[in-house]
Image (cartoon, rainbow, N blue to C red; front, top):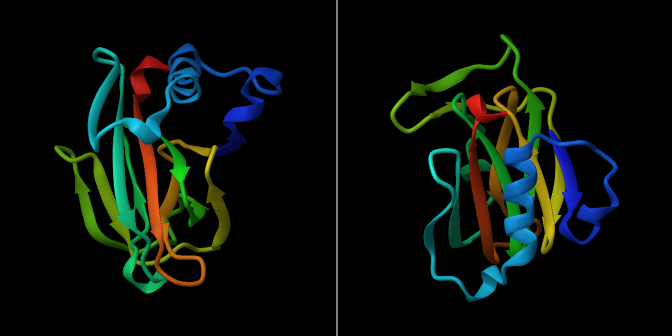
Length: 156
């Protein structure tokens, strides 16, 4: 997992694969607050963005998840939420097995658990070995606009 700020994207601390860099530049160069909720292609067959608007939920109502075919780039546009994280390990208990069509599996808990605040303009790059729990309320449920960019793993 990598975390960062769109405002500091040009400082070049980390060399990223072309498809991830292109997705981050898309996030930085568009005013996504004005976009309707839905899917937007970035690179056909390689990456796309999904704009979501929702209320965050209590931690107990959010399930940790993992993907195999796509890297997630989660970027909050408005609001803030906790993003829970842990590395994938055989010690984690699967509660919903991997669904290849939806590219997702769900886990019971994050072990060990790390949480950080994802606020407007910040992003997290989550690879297939990054189990993550999005949409978690910090103190109480609040409105969030977030973009999740899906980048095909085989494009890296």
